[in-house]
Length: 111
Length: 115
Figure 1 (tube, rainbow over the protein chains, first blue to last red):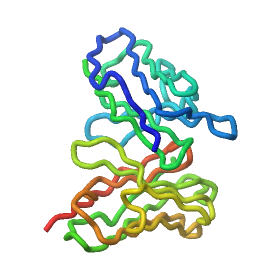
Figure 2: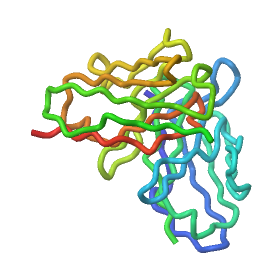
Figure 3: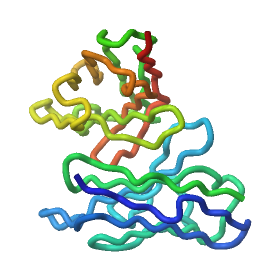
Figure 4: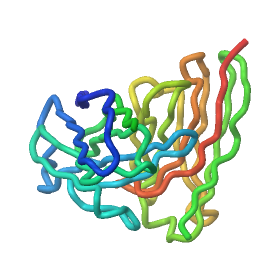
């Protein structure tokens, strides 16, 4: 199975400052159809997960443009350009390239 | 508004069975892959199972293969997860998730397996 390793696991942030989360894969996430199926999710306390980013860098509907995704192959990054108070929560990367789909361990973002 | 509503979660004993359901609305249900993802208490997210648009392809996590069965009824816009031989480690909130890119999540339904 593909193992996704997120770092850091805990990320203290300052309001208005940038924040970055890394997701590294145990193997390439480039699909044979030439897409790379990496998603990023945000889970606020007490809520269901919400998708932020799909296919590495495509922002979901209604997602603020301060969230951006990048990467290729085995290394991927989620960046929050200017952290706001509502961004507190746990962030997960996920790969949908290889079965079984797998998630990273999660990164807790706290002010 | 696209919405997914799960139901069927309950407290059951080890070895028992349970069927979860999910009803979709606000989108063309029959055109999307559908998935189940779970989250154990205080734990991260774990993919459980996926089914393609017409139900001809299904995929399962190793931890549930042979015990869980995913199915769908496009006429009824519903997704199901039949869970047999339940174990304590199946205790979790189960989320119904729309699409290959996991765009929409339900509110989740809790399953507790305990004697």
